[in-house]
Image 1 (cartoon, helix red, strand yellow):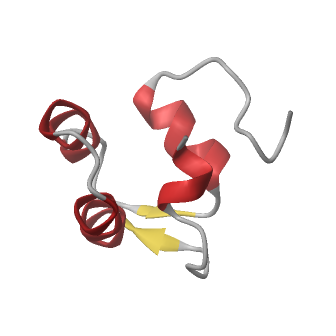
Image 2 (image 1 turned 180 degrees about the vertical axis):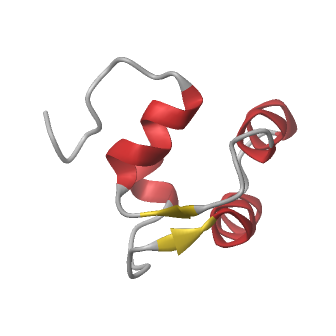
Length: 63
């Protein structure tokens, strides 16, 4: 799921860029709220975002 949200964006991404991408993709408000609580910093790749969200499952790109 997350891979599709950020598809086409160039990493690293700042937190605000993650939020804009999620909003533009149409992620549910509940998930956007969860994403809004990740620390303010640069994320080098999708794995770092998933780690910040506490997601243990590998992303679609890693599966």
